[in-house]
Image (cartoon, rainbow, N blue to C red; front, side, top):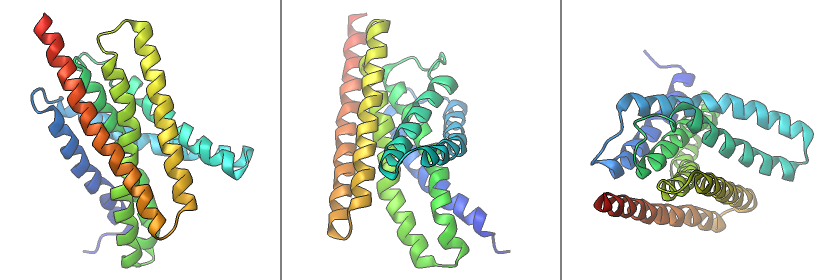
Length: 231
């Protein structure tokens, strides 16, 4: 039996996100996170998408096009960060610095999964396979990794402040959120303005950020090992 387009779109959004989730969870192989918490965080990210769409629709009605684009970014990054705070970051299993990065990336991938599904639903419904593959690949290699990079940046900031006083934790988290908004805004701005070969430069910007995120993971792991040695 042929699956309806809505199901194909959902699978097309979720399956690639699951691949990236598996990929990033491997960064914490020594102390893997409880599967139920990972799933809960991923689903929470998906549930944030309708909220973001409503707020973005409201922003469109209130602001100019340029201001609205920036508002979309703020809405998405604040929702992902706030969602993680509410759903998981208070949990007793979040007990080492790297956990902040893992869960921020997880909620970002959940958000990206449903967002991608909505983007590819139209070409699937129209039976346009080439457009579906082009959009899917674009989201898989670009927009999804952008969400990972922006939310991962917040996670890194929180991880670096893990052993610091509460005031410094708040400061680092706020700085991480600010950087995430800036990174996301830069990507959106250049995606709108770019075409052809210039589009590759936008993707390179994201991929370079992901490489830096890998180094940040190692920095946080080193911070954690050094702290444990002093105990």
